[in-house]
Picture 1 (cartoon, rainbow, N blue to C red):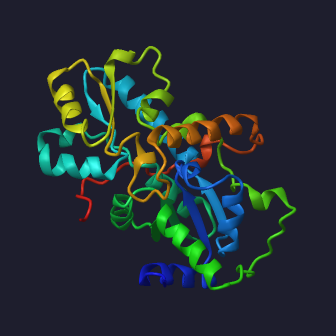
Picture 2: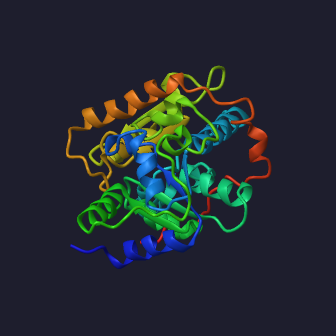
Length: 299
């Protein structure tokens, strides 16, 4: 079976363009680390980044907003399906959506601001709706994990050689690892309640002022609880079961619990990973726009 025209165009772009892959933090569900990094480089991708730096910036902004507005309620806007649902079904909650973009969008903007001109961004994740969000925010390309696997399978079945327009040394640790900016506990961002769990809210909000909801069977009830209880200051809500690990673009058919555990195991594995003193500095983000648009995500 051949590739879709969209995937064919992306593969062609990898021959001629400098591309940075933005790999969603749910990747351990479907791909082994660090093998996935080398696999992406062998497709012709120049750089591979995690979204942890963007997630950390977002958390810092959430904390600031909650601290400065103690009487207001907010809804996390990371999930495009949730944003679309609010716009269509709960318009009275639109002004509760926090004015902060998603990690995908923030990392895309960081790449465009800090990297040399000419780099294209390719988001790779578990979410079909993210592809629509990517169009809205000008992200160059966006595919699901299933589509990435389809590219791997197609290349293997057709004996397509690895791209060699830049040097890959399988003995070099750097080719097996992310192009790092920041290493953080926000690696559990894609899990249900992961945003609320990773925020530092001591003296800002108590646990009973945070509500975490995931799964299509639970979101309506979550919205109703949020509307009825003014004590809830932050609604951390994701449409898919278990969070992004239950996304429709995931390859794995394993139980949600097993998928969640893979993300947690990856986080534990990375605890030993020390970032250099010059990395992870927040002055890199000076002047970076992390706000979200009020425009509706295209269908």
